[in-house]
Image (cartoon, rainbow, N blue to C red; front, top):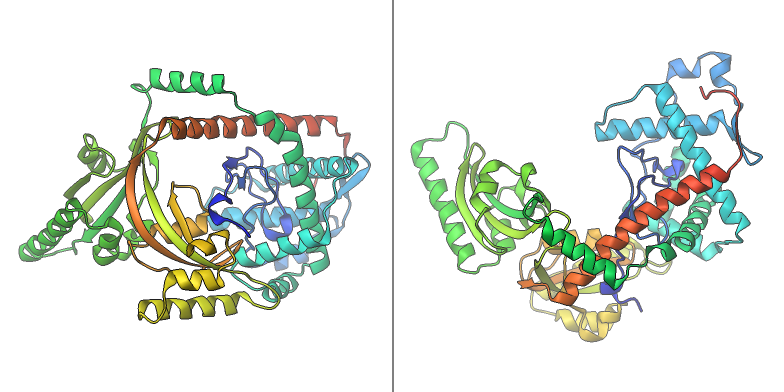
Length: 472
């Protein structure tokens, strides 16, 4: 059984992210990919639609239509069609992100270099004797489907509509898993962090704390004021915002107040705006919270958008782990997605559980003990007090958006389908041990990034690359 609270590994933002062109993972350096340590592939998302050649392209010159070798990597060719497929995906992704589109020839060169590096890594994985069995590939297929919130059958239909052979899709997944295991084997041992390094890091951060940029995570409740509102309307809305602030200061759960009073745009993740440098918040917010501690309330504040009530979720100097965090006590019921139980069936079953619990016809802990496949089942699904970042993003986002005693809609993750209930929240100071663990994670992630960049250069440098014709 999986004990869910221990699943998530420290995340690594890689300088160059490995990608699968067939599923639009060509995330150029503009948008590096998030990875879970170096443990297998990433959150895989299918494109909204397959990029297709325009009519002008399809009737273009013979030179643009012909397939030819553009480069050879250790005797293995890379063809123009491979580059064009990845190039179209990259252009589509940049367009969807609203990112500036570089000149096509420049982007094509970047795509080619990425393909060369990928090919060299895959060759090294094969030479190293790394193998991936069929079961691991099938598990990866199910992960792709879940993360795109579709069934495996729907995934196959989507691939077929995009002109992608399912066998080729699985072959590329196998390659990605092989390379991921190679990176794990080669890089993980280089990321060990000693106690002396932790001591030095903490001393250095304390020494420059005064000069470091402040980082904040604020949660807000926004009471909007319509344009051309009368003085009476403004006064009524201000009174409403003051009532919200008074209740927050009196200890009412802030997420519950967010769900009750805040406008829809500010409700995500319990109103939290995320940890960011202070200069990325409105000066009004920074000034109002400058002398507040974690857990304190500010407001109501008036801006052009309305009245704001703020809660300080986290405040720290950049580069340092926060000394105060908000912990959440939650429990969950986890149902698997299997050939015998589809994702839709698991969602329907958990939705019925939620209805019964809220109607007083069933007990959450009893249902967890009887149905959950998680290691927490014997404890009634209890996950204990959890620090931020302990759970996978989709689980944590749903959990953070719940008020105390609130129950989520069914939540799909890579592990199955969850029903989540928050039973408590508290602000707590990190112990010295926890501070050191946080510092260790920061140093380890930095070492992984550096080791990955160096290793990637070494792999690329050892490969024999012969350039033929420029991609078109």
